[in-house]
Image 1 (cartoon, rainbow, N blue to C red):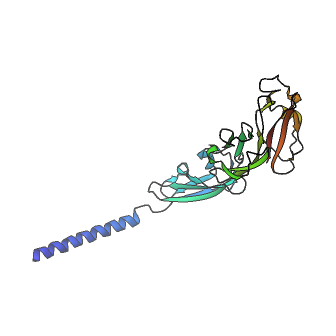
Image 2: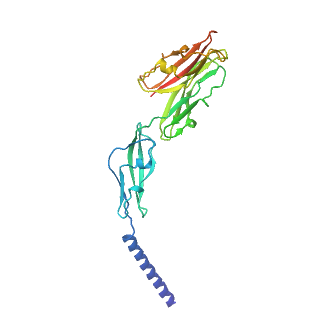
Image 3: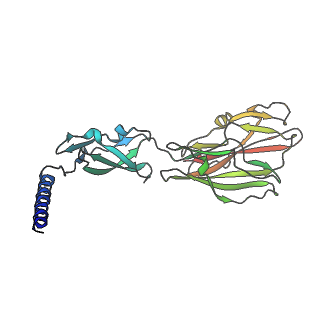
Length: 277
């Protein structure tokens, strides 16, 4: 019994000494001091396609043991946009003992623009036909690329039984949280092979505020025109362009009408939407 007590006491002393030694080593020898990141204070303006090295410009990192560890700074993430072209970047740096620190600063993108829509075919449908945007309306973003799959209808009121022009509103949001909204016209009309044919290279374009769009510029979008589906070719100069709705003095969407009436007194019209940014 006495031997057991001696063994237990001896083990207790050994464990206590080992713990004390580890505690002293941990407190005096293990590096527990986090590194630091310092910014030179200069505003940072970069492209949306900037590399990680460009995003880290103006930052330095130092550690009490490792010294200069600027090359270990990493970009943890980039926030969604705030304002028109700004975001927050979150950085981190680790030393060789796995101590770390974080840093956050604001950046401004020099070439950012909101997501844009494109319309490859007119939203023109015969009376009674189904109205569909698929294969006609697309969306792209300077950061995300093709975001057509994120297009959402926010407003639609179209009667396929009554000829007329009906506005529909669509929107799309990129991963930066920026949303673009446009209102485009849907034309419900009766069109046969005897009607004129007008085709444009684009049916939705963007213009700057107060930008002047001339008839000459707009005629360059006419890629083909015919008296009928198998009729004689027409010159772009034969097409009537109605600019009466065009207003580039304010942001929003306006429409330009391209139309032609043939010798059978049949008229065909397509609309181009102008988005004023």
